[in-house]
Length: 253
Length: 245
Image (tube, each protein chain N blue to C red):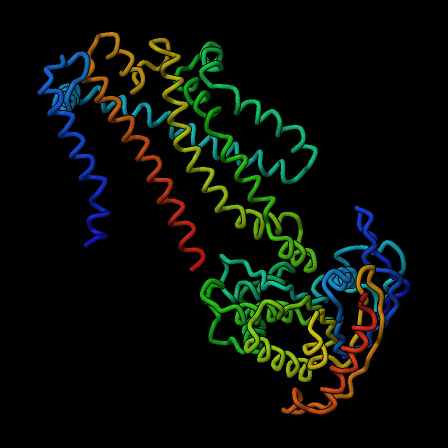
């Protein structure tokens, strides 16, 4: 009973919140261009169904592509850093500098430099997203149990054998944890890039639709795009959670 | 089978861990390295395994430096790969030397049977108890048919019942196989029960304070035999003599 209630709690809370919101909008007579109620938002979504769904696909493609690039780049750099302390010393500070510089400040440059709009957005989102994969994978590679490394040495393992049979499998949980963080960051990066690019960018993503709706004071449409954005975030987070669940649960039981 | 002559080890931070260790280990012996925590007995084991180099002195082998897989090593933790089954873990040393799975499986099965885990072939480490994991770890050390088995406090983390059972099984295994074993422990009882010879080490810097041969006869009452109890007494007195007051 308690468990069922606990499972239902977020939905109940959401429904109650939406109900109160709608009631407040109706009761106060606040105009729709200031604060639309949930019903107006759903209507706006239904009225602009195709455009908004296209925008959803566009933004999630940018985030997805950036996540794939981040995963590849993060793993390759982490491997290079694990293989040589010289490479580590050379790369690490620059990766940190890139990570701590706000992407909003770099995005205009990237959008000027990279002509192809989709590519420009992916580059921006990758700049934001790749660091967690890199740092987590590097930590995982470094945390390989020393005893197992000794065991591999005692049995004359080559570097490649140690990498494939020990270091990479040992780093997998770390990599997957990094990937989950990077997933949500890739979306943040995609949105920021779209905002910065404005109509000069891909001109079709959710963030662009939010800007556009803002200029036109179509606040209900703005909320509808925002709702889709939240859904994109949940979808990415959920998909990556499922991926790591499948990959890790199966392997240790 | 091997000889340590004047072996010392100083770590890069300047700590002198071992000082002037000389000893020889004969084929078929079961040698216990006994000493308090931090006396360098694990370091000595790592030197024998060639996982570290001595700062001074020589380690010589009667038939040449052991090749890959000729030394079996059992760590304090089972250190199994959690993503691999018991059989895959035991297969590892053979796999690293290029043996195919099909060719190696009879040996893997035999090694698991040797430690009493024939039925746990495909079990993952997470589903095994601490004692069973240690058994897998021992099977992994035995599968490459090493000349020398080095064990670094392998039973220290186990409960007493499991530890006794594993000690008995290890002793039986040693008697059957005639392997040379060097076993690091900080338990006087464990050393006295298992070994044919006990090297007592002094606190840091580690030196060999005494070399005591065991005359305890093999029997099922080994743990309560009078000469076992005498040996425990003798070793205890030696240890308290080398420990600072």
